[in-house]
Structure formats: C-alpha cells, structure tokens
Length: 391
Ligand SMILES: Cc1cc2nc3c(=O)[nH]c(=O)nc-3n(C[C@H](O)[C@H](O)[C@H](O)COP(=O)(O)OP(=O)(O)OC[C@H]3O[C@@H](n4cnc5c(N)ncnc54)[C@H](O)[C@@H]3O)c2cc1C
Image (cartoon, rainbow, N blue to C red; front, side):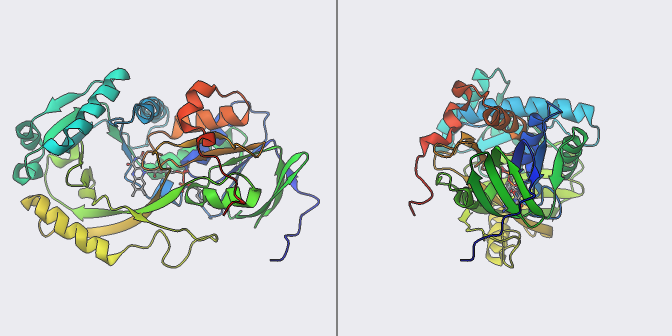
C-alpha cells in the first residue's frame, strides 16, 4: 500500500468531527457552545445527513425497554420539541406512539411501561378494541395489547439535518463537504487527518462516521469495536383514510411491522435486519441505499397478512438505510480505551434521531474531558476492549 502524502500546511482546528450525520452535527453544535473553539466537521458526501440520518422514519420514540436508552430518548425528545418551537418548519407532530404486542411479548410491554414511568413519562395501556376504534387497519389485525405514549412524536428529518447544519455554521463551525477521510496520523500534538479536501490537524478527533466508524478507528489506530451495520427498508405507500393524519405511529413488536402517516399515505417498514458490510469508499453501486426486490416482496405479503386494509398496497417510493449496532444495543460514546484524543459518537442503532441531542452533548463533554463517567457509563467504549491491530 502506498503511504499517504502528508501536507505540511494542514488546516488547524481545536476539534475535528468525522461525519455530518446527526451524531456529528449535534456533537459539533455542542462543542460550539464556546464560540471561540475551532470545530471542523469532515463529511465524505456532497451534502450533510445523506446516509442513515437522511434515510430513516423520523419517529421520536421514548417507548423503549432499555432504561438507559429510554433516559436518553426522553432527554432527546424534550430538546427536539424545544428546537421545533424555536425553528418552525421542522414538521414536529406530537401524535404519540402505539406499541403493540401479543401475549408472548407481554414482558416487553411491561418493560417499556416501567422504563417510561421511571423517567416520569405518561403512558397508558390500550386494549385492541380501543386501538382498532382509532386506527382502522387494526380492526382486521390479530388481537394485540398496546401501550400508548402520548408524548412521542414525529418530524421531518431533512429539515432537522438542514437546521442543525445551519446552526453549526452560524455558531462558527465549518462543515466541509466532499472531504472523505482517507488517512489519519497520530503525532505528538494530536492528529493529522488527510481528506479529499486537504489535510486538517487537531488535538482531538470525534468519530461520528456511523456505519463507517470502524473504518475511521482502523485508520487512526484506535480500538476495534464490535459495531455491526444492518440494513432496513422503508416504503411510502398510497393509503386513503381521512383520520390517518392524526394516528400515532404504530409499531407491532409481534408482527415486526411499523407504519406512520405521511402526506397522502403511510410510511411503513417490515423491520428487516440484514447484516451489511459498508465499503471503505463512498457510495457504491449496490450500496446501502439500493433496495432489495426480495424484501419488497416479503413486505407486501407481510402487510397483506397483517390487515385486510393493507392488501394490494401500492408502493410509491422505497429506500433503505443502515442501523449500526453494538451487541448490547447501547451506544458508543466516550474516549477510546487506548488512543488518547480519539472519541466515539457511534452505534446509535435505530434511535439516532430521537437521541441526537443528548448523544452530541455527551460526546462533546467527552471530547472536552468534562464528561461525567456515571452518565457515559453504559455507553463507554471501554466495555469492549480490543485493539484494531488484533484482526
Ligand atoms: C430505516 C431506518 C429507520 C430509522 N428510523 C428511526 C426513527 O424513526 N427514529 C430514530 O430515532 N432513529 C431511526 N433510525 C436510526 C437513525 O437514522 C440513526 O441512528 C442515525 O441516523 C445515525 O446517525 P449517525 O450520525 O451516527 O450516522 P450517519 O447518519 O450515517 O452519519 C455518518 C456520516 O459519516 C460520514 N462518513 C463515513 N465515512 C466517512 C469518511 N471516511 N470521511 C468523511 N465522512 C464519512 C457518512 O457519509 C455519514 O454522513 C432509523 C434508521 C434506519 C436505517
């Protein structure tokens, strides 16, 4: 392998953040609370939020079983609501969520209820009858129990990314697009990072590269983390029902299916979870954004079996994105266990929109050496300790 050429005139910053998804943008925004700090976000694509952060369902879900994730989701929802008030046009709709399950998943439902209760978030049990009276497709579906969380919400993810990018720039941060990180060198003063848009140096690097976070760690010589990206599909389907606009988002844990209203129809997912190996380079043919015909067939069949209202669904648009997970489902936020100055903000799984703000708050605190270890505890990378060299 040819060794990279290192520019002697690398642009200097206080903090480099790799990745302009929600994790990286939020981290940068929190770092910029001190406006004299020079923060540069390096993004490989020609626009921010083009990967998972722009390819998700935009559901703000606090109704989760893991108490640690629930706590972050509650904080994240609160901040997003305040943002939506300050930045009209985010498409914030406090519709609530309805999580459904059959008897076999009763424990999961009660786990959600107790996690919400611990956070002081109201939820109520809904009988199948009550749910079906409000959400027509549930009438013909199999019997379920439900939990309704009225403060859950949805928003427009593209506007969120645009607003957050604008806020980072307005606070004096730089978001450099088309700047794919190709090499990282550790030196006594910190890191020099070579990108397609020149070299940058800083004492601190935050790795917010989503599904590519392992690659960035490898380039830097940081720890090897057990991050696994999984692909999931979303379908925009034509659906006519005048009441649909006010429905909560509905997630059926037993059927592995969710749906929520969008303009003129429903956004739906068959909750597919197939491991995906992202290429080291940028967008690849057959990459994470291409969709799989087989999954579409499975989805059509699953939806029709779920409810007669969903038989013969017409798909208007489809997309796929990556959810990058750790084995315990918690995040990777905090200092690398072996490489000083290298911090993680990755592994947000299926919760990175809801939790974007607390993730950024914690990652920024970590990068500044101000993080409370009690807060980072469940998400600390040090719980998985291996070096990248050990392959
Ligand atoms: C189908 C689907 C539905 C979802 N629905 C929801 C939902 O309803 N609610 C919710 O809360 N969450 C949801 N999620 C999860 C959420 O989308 C993710 O957790 C979140 O977007 C992850 O953000 P991120 O910034 O970590 O990653 P990303 O958005 O992927 O950002 C990482 C960035 O790093 C950049 N990058 C990578 N390598 C390099 C490099 N070498 N140099 C420079 N830049 C690089 C990438 O281009 C990318 O922009 C969903 C996810 C999927 C796939």
